[in-house]
Length: 505
Image 1 (tube, one colour):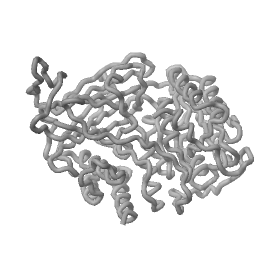
Image 2 (image 1 turned 90 degrees about the horizontal axis):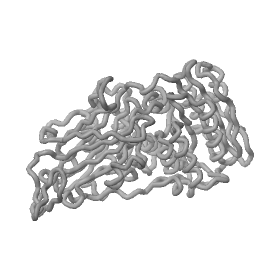
Image 3 (image 1 turned 45 degrees about the horizontal axis):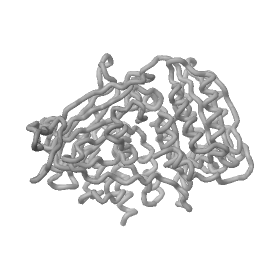
Image 4 (image 1 turned 30 degrees about the horizontal axis):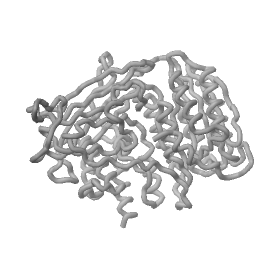
């Protein structure tokens, strides 16, 4: 997916035709605003899902890491509204939750660990399910300050209770995480952009919160100039070796104005190369441009979250502050080599718009996902055991002479991970084999819960490769694997499955 493709489809804004901040809001902000679904102009990426691949002809599977979580919270919003979910990305459902993967030691050579586990596939008798977990270190890569620019959409389309009011209170939570070593700038955009704060010290909480709560919505949506202004402020207050980031908050109704999509793509990628990243927070419903916001975050070396409640804002901007703000591994790519002696066919679940060509794995000019401090990345492969007549080619697990023969290794697969240290131009590779001991008939609670989320995703998306994926079975498995559930998110998932079944019925 390219940013040009998604931005070209965006509308020119809705709501009040005047410019400026005009529509106020009640300070009594509800935790979750749920209203009847209206006429939807929402836009989602429709990348085709991956079919099963034959290990003999396609032994490698390559994809870019994804730490976005927007799809899950957006699905939650839709289910609470009583509508069938759109834009469901299975990997984002799975990666919304924390898992108890072992973290690397503070002085480890690489800033992440790789964990594998293989068990029976719950929805496909005779198949196996492989879980791969990449856990990033909790250690921040720098002690330098934050240079953060809030780029806030105050156009007319934001004048709803679950948009601008929630946006203001969400960023107020972020402000509370900052101190005297940080700087904050605030740029708003509607018909034109306006600088409300420039390089304000991060411990001036009251001043910054007052500015946020004074926001009013009105006008068209001209985001391109606002983005340029935000980058100018980020450059002006740049902290060498620190966290320099633009945080864009919008419903995605992002008119590129005088710029072409290609020019905007170039602008975002140019600043990403200088160390100014852009993350995206989505708000609202009805005209959510999910595909656009995901693309902006991808090109800007940032992450994309959807904020449907103040609790979600707290999760992203407070509980996951380091993971959202501090990158520990750039351009992280995963390549899995399957062993034909143990696997005949396979399928990667999700990551449909994150798949890479195999040769792009070692190409350091190819952009991929960035992983923040404490983030984890989880991927599932559905594996089909080998059958008669499976051919083979020459790789780690296969030997080519005059005839093609499968090797004798009992491994399921080998995981190759490439990443760059922040600011580096060349990547480092980590290799981890999933041997026969990766198999278990007593999978961990994390495996059980994450596989339940994946199974639910297969059912919700009506995947043609879903086997007999069943929300009821997924619910039972999830309910039995809640674990500590510190924030109640796993229990909430069980409730969402119940809600889905009510809607489906």
